[in-house]
Image 1 (tube, rainbow, N blue to C red):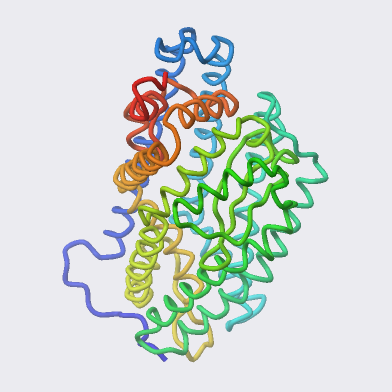
Image 2: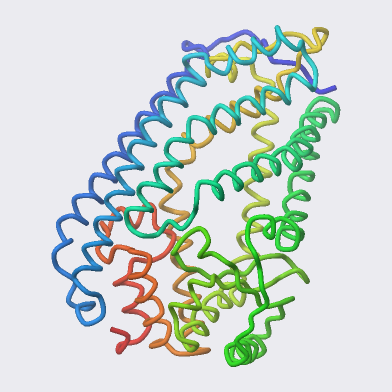
Length: 438
């Protein structure tokens, strides 16, 4: 059994629990103000340029399509502001205002301590959080996306997806949660290292089984039947030294008019997936260029780098959680009274997990620009690889069609891009492909 909570005497002028409360509250406030400011910049910038297509795009994007993209972008940002306000209120409600503490105490009174109570705490938290997010999910799907012509999902299909997701959460989520909670209580002071190993193994297993067992529960995947396109794509993959288990077309049009293509799986389970909407919108040369871009991510080992970064960050996170879970000020500073004493059969492991997941975004939000910059650099590298393997003109024309069909704004606020965008803005991205791209 690992060491209990640390009740060492406090010698600082400001008690650690109060310092934790103040630090958390200040970071949440700063993050809220910064997000509001960035969103307002994005809304104003897009609205200011909605009536004039940028000169470089004038021959390719119609004024009506440009205005639609502006309206869609502004609507999404405004909805995001409402989500931000409610999300911040919910975060403070769970923590400093005592919501998580009240839920834990109620479950303790109802179920007593032990694994059942801890799993119930995680499940109830997930259920309540899902109910809080539900109005926004419904509005985005059946109002916002519907208004701009993107939603293809029926209420019955949406409900079926929801039920499947809940079942998957129970079947997959509860066992791994139970394993981590068990390790927290039984694996000694280095429980966090064993929990990290279990978590990483679980993620690698998901990469293997997702394409074959999970994704087909939500979408239909048919082998690519266009022989000409199949030959073109196969030749490209052979030139690039990439082997996949198959080429598949996904019925993305059942849910949305948005288009995409992606790789999924890991190792021998890798497969190439095209949305049917993508194949309907793009010419074969453009599909080839989009695929070459995705292959560029593999050629430059971006996927491997992301997995390694995930391993490193999650290891640091588990190590930090391992230390924080033994500090009483971590609980009390975030509005929770820890369960005292192992003899009561009431460990704090689920509380520690939830508090950590709730608090850590407030401390890491300010890394967003750095992470976004790295992602944009990877996109530029993948674009350059696609140009070398196919044609800059084909990739540029494909991106132009996707920008138009997905109503992506051509005039985002530059600072908003630097802070949030994982992909470069349209003008900057297309200008790098080829001088004749536009």
